[in-house]
Length: 169
Image (cartoon, rainbow, N blue to C red; front, side):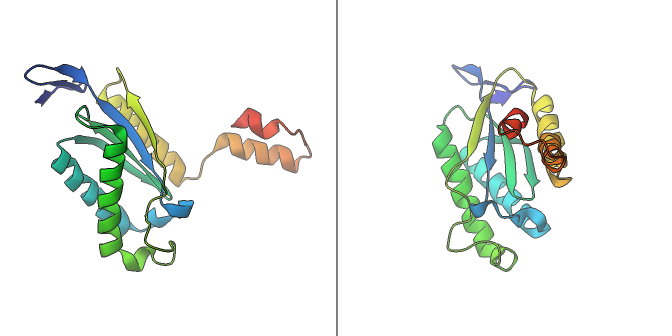
């Protein structure tokens, strides 16, 4: 199979786009990614699983308490299967190699929370999605959530509208 810059994959009898954006969160949304060792170990595990499945990682970014993956060439697999493979293998590798870094933040044998976020990416270019993910991650590390900060400021100023949080979320 060959892939072009638009994420279009060409096989012997198929042509199509199969880009997927996924977000995984560690159990209890702990900030395990403050450790560079945990980030590098997780990236390596994701890369190994991508090679095993034959999918391409276009972008992989980490916030303090979650990670984003932008995957291409996913048409052979279901979303739950991809999530299971990436989360299961990376959990095993991170727990095996980074237990010292994560043992204070997690309890039990689970590394990832049970759920995940996913969305298929249509006619975006891979570069555009990579830019989006990297820009969003920058915001997470700086702890910038403008709407939530505005909500808190209103609360401090005495505006006590029950629906005020809803209009910011």
